[in-house]
Image (cartoon, rainbow, N blue to C red):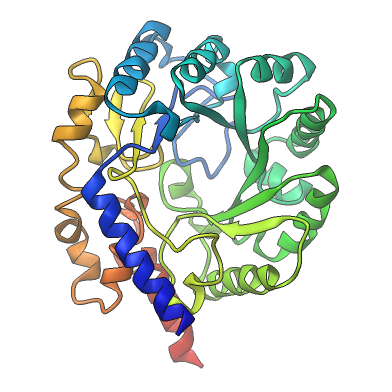
Length: 363
């Protein structure tokens, strides 16, 4: 009965979001440049700066932030800077501080390697409230995925620096799960607990960017089942760290009520919106560019947000129909997540729910 009430409340919540269409998470990809070239990167980020000439200027992004704040309550919006590596952008602190002055909550996603005393102090002056650090398992696993020996130790050093400088915001870990690290996660968590990390969010890698050339890293049906079971069982215990799954897909009621802080819902184009390095507007930074909705160099973000995004809203069922037609879980799942579309892998392989059903049928 508790599960039923939870699911009914969740359905009501989704409908409220669809009616409101209010931006709650504004992502900005300031650059594709990164100090790493991870083998599973979904954005094809690179150490080269060949795309720099196409990047938005400081003036352009600040202009959009101001305009959005005139139409929506900025105090209700998380402004999250992703990448590339955002700490390579020289105006990050200026933009973050400006966003905060307008009322936005300011956060970044980083690999943490560039965190040092000077950088952390600058981030605190810019009123950073949340920092999510990408770290993909124990040292050997992380360094192989990062294509950089020593990356793990440098990131851990950056994390320690945050706490040494008494960073007041939230520090969390984002961990991409692959066949390489899926069975080493408890050891990884044990390494993080003494550092003071509040949350670790796991998400299976998916077939975008360089990950397309690394299909051996994609989780098998059994590995996915084992990952979800691990998270479910871990969350039952009293823990010093919050372990959760990202909003990467829908896995059925058996898991959905146990593996996340909230039930799965892809809010791309409904409560999430993103501005890419060149001004492209899309539902989220990790979604295929096939689903872009416009460019702020042609129309303002607000205009695009109010007038576009049909596929993300009214057209979602039609868009997912080739994979989801007649699925009994549609009302809860609604396709899982937009980042699963337009991948060069058979559609059935992208559906976590179908993967888990195959495991059940084999028993």
